[in-house]
Amino acid sequence: MTSSAHTSGDGAGLDDGSISSLIPSVSKAHRNLAGSLLADLGLAAGQQFVLMLLWKVSPQSQSDLTRQLLIEPPTTAKMLARLESAGFIERRRSGADRRVVLVSLTESGRALEGPVTSVWHRLEQQTTRDLTPVEQGQLRDLLARVAQSLTTEADAGSSEDGA
View (cartoon, rainbow, N blue to C red):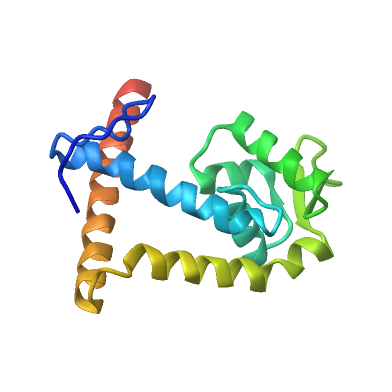
């Protein structure tokens, strides 16, 4: 791999040698590859996460999905609308609390579990193909630590703002 500078319209491809410039580049490349692999299943990148959560527990409230996905409510609403239009999920108001929107899998959504899991494994293999098993473990540990430090920092900042 070369260390030449690459740029994209959003600057995410700028390689100045810093970890902070590599993270968005890797994220964007990973999302693009995921999107191309998932497209054959009728999914866009990111939608698989909703399905993965619903495969574990269905139904779930729209607000719980938003919280678990770490995205904004309008983003969740748009993603769910597309999944509903494709026939993979259905939304309905809770009988107990009409303010709550419950999201459930359809049979078509349940049927995607095997194919999406297969795509997810293929994505993992392609992502880590140039790493040894030891390096994969190290990368997993390092990324978990980076995520933890960023989450801790963000949580500290939001609690200071809310105080």
